[in-house]
Length: 197
Image 1 (cartoon, rainbow, N blue to C red):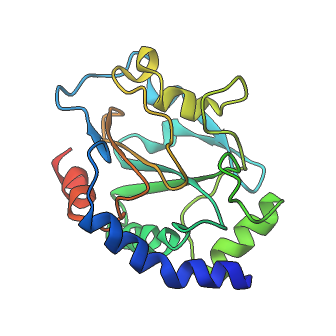
Image 2: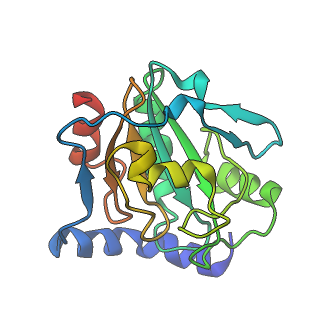
Image 3: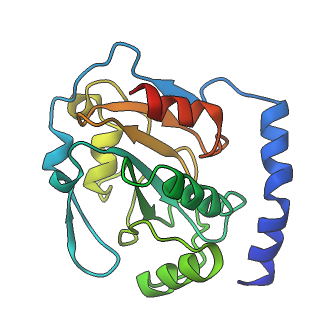
């Protein structure tokens, strides 16, 4: 961990306290009408960090959280919270990390360095995908294109606003929530959403 990363890890609780005190609207989007996707979530796949193809058909019957991540960001300490949530929800929630440099905060250059950083500094055991583009542009990862295109997911047009934006898919493959970086993975809102859907 670089000195900058150590500093960012130390100030993370202060950053989250500030967000809690000055709560902004738009941090959480919810599929209240339970609109089903037009294109099945289970038809998607991603390139895993280890070079294999990760088929989303393997996720049927599970809640899934997809998160765009970075190693050199004020929110990087959420890796630890994501790992804790993953352990708490073992068997019912799968978390998939999608490293990206779209907000110029990645830190590590290679997929191997990213995996090593996550394991060594935060004990990450959930699957990590290959580094890709998550914001809307012609190179956008097809998973994030699905997540941010209502013509595919049924309702949500929100691309990641920053690193550690979180999307929740329920057991039937419906996108139920978007949580901004400012919402902790261990928040009541996230845990309630997992239980309710």
